Length: 339
Image (cartoon, rainbow, N blue to C red):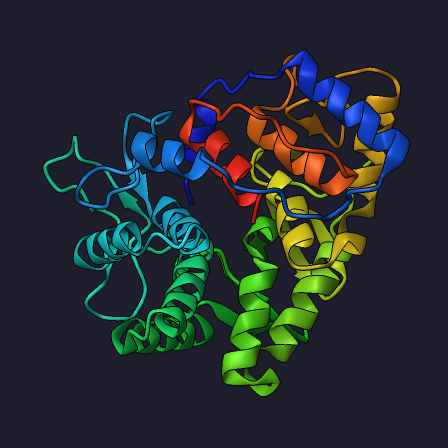
């Protein structure tokens, strides 16, 4: 949903990260292990969360997304910061919650006369919001959060999952993705630890088929010589998947989260081609590019941000960058890679 964020130039990479990744390729001893959050949560919170609980996208004209609110919630929960969690939850519900269904508008722009002008949702934001609310409701005995999480899960299942091509397809949003002859998907919206939690809460009869089909789609969405997924894919049949026409066919800023959620959801086998490609880059002492075109092989002329490097480090088995990125999205990926 938040395609406008990719107009931002995200070019931070350090030699120290490259050295650390090289060491990881040689040892592989820490693959998939979470790293301590230490003081980075306080830095992230103070840099990106305003006093009302709005998470600010500093790289995109200081707007906010349901995505960012969801990241703030799960990171606050992970840091056991109830006060910040509550502020973010309250702002999210008061500002982005829809009146007609238990989902959230995807975008808030404080510069517009109507800050929430598009009611469509972003399913990944709703998924992580529901996940975080359920976890926090259980930890802090808040029945309102628990109930709201349950309602959001039900709304996602009802409005953002469609039966097509003998599969249960998890749409990126309610509107604009399922057409008569094709369905557009974003595999980075398959947030495995959240979906697994949904299945525990609601049962495999509700979520089992969705999870299995998301896994199958992720395995099938591999393109080009390196067999990499792209940011967006289009399905025209059960096993007929191609990079979405009209969008750059890149393993880029969206698709890198496929690797992130695969690690967090204990499904690294889903992204073996990604780890293989990253290892080959590091073995050749080349920075991992921020994106690669799976059709032409063209690579970004700049490397991954600290956020991307943190995900690569988590997958390959090294410590993440020590310095928190100044950009909202890159810093958020760094923090999520530490879950």
